[in-house]
Image (cartoon, rainbow, N blue to C red; front, top):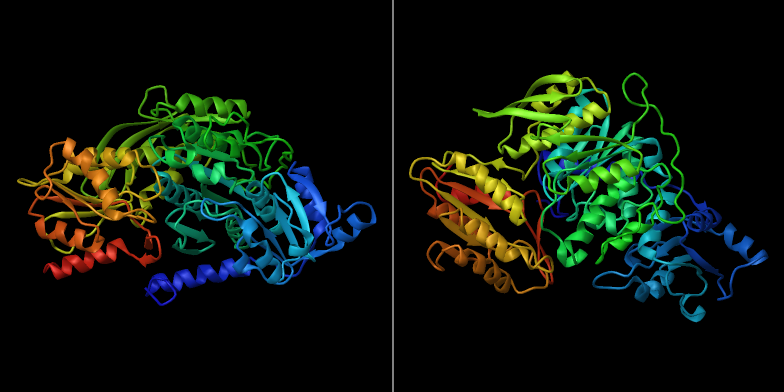
Length: 588
């Protein structure tokens, strides 16, 4: 990597081009505060406006406040510049209200707060008091960046696993069918013709970054955007004010309970994506209730704005439909199907079930991937994928269903899927001439780890077995750690537990929790179960112990650019480290 954290070579060129497009999307000039005040009031967020002297802004004072101009927005006081509006957001580790003084000192003229500060501490700033600043941030961002999603066809993809690959497939299929499409995903960003790895360590960016990216996508001439929409992004309203046209569910399993509290709340956050398809709401509102309870409030919430008609930018000048695409094979399918119907949107299902609208049969592996027969409401065809993992047929079915909803040419959709070569860090095979298979994948939940390991069993040669190298994130779902250990222990001849992102937790404590599950499955510490916090050393150990016919899976990091510790982020590239370890072992 270069000194500023970018990958070297062609990757760095693409990343710098992407950063340039994002920088160009930042609005120039100023906007009057009156527009933001009205927007927050319409969204039902605004509680009070306090003038520079600490007095309520009414009458002539309100008019004067409205004439104040804003030159930018920020939710990090270190990024405030003169004339900015600073949004004080309470977070997990720090409360933005503690930094309003620093923001004013850096030149912030307007503060969006839940609790007004004493005039002496924040003078001469104007304070907009809101009910929840995390939700207001989405409204502020959409206003500042000019609501770019209002003129884009927006496809949101949610689910526990498969979002990133499905998003990449969707871009390939839509562009093959003549729809210029941008991408915001865990692994990649695509803006116009520029595509590069995502620089963030989160799937759904905070609202300002997301709105700026959508503005850049629109400016590049794209007419659609594929947006990975996580439960965090939905519950925290990072995606607030985005008028989604299509919602896709991949699947739903155990994940992120440290954040949501219960599976029901986790599911409700995902469900809110489908609720946003309703014609009566694009505002940021009720999804925030999906943190820690069953989230009974609709995502459209009070103060929602009625969605406007989008440009007819589909082939043939057709308008964008509203639709929900649901994995019929998932146990939670009925919940998402009901949300789609309640939103007044078209429902399409996909899967192996005979009742699915889009169905795959006769799935087979080929020398270079997968093949299946696909049946849709408009006919049938042959699906070909140049990917490992039979589960990728399900991901592709979601995209075929998307093509059906948008009435794209079925042959072009299938051609786009056939040409898709995968996403970095997703079932990525590394071959340096070694006598065993080496796979890098992002699997980091018990269900995805089981799915990948089961699928890789087909690659095991005579005398071989499976080796898994993985960890579990710190300050995240604790319950899944022993489950991951058991899943791997039941399937592998060797399990090596290692660091994923320990954050502020003790690395060995996390590995011990993984080991509990592996030992329950019959593995023995120091023999077929190793605890090695240093991830590079863990990978080197797996390669050293691999034999002919083995399949070595490096799981959990995939595309990610760093390993997060309490005090530092260590630069990381799983593929590059694996290649270096192979070379050190004499391969390639």
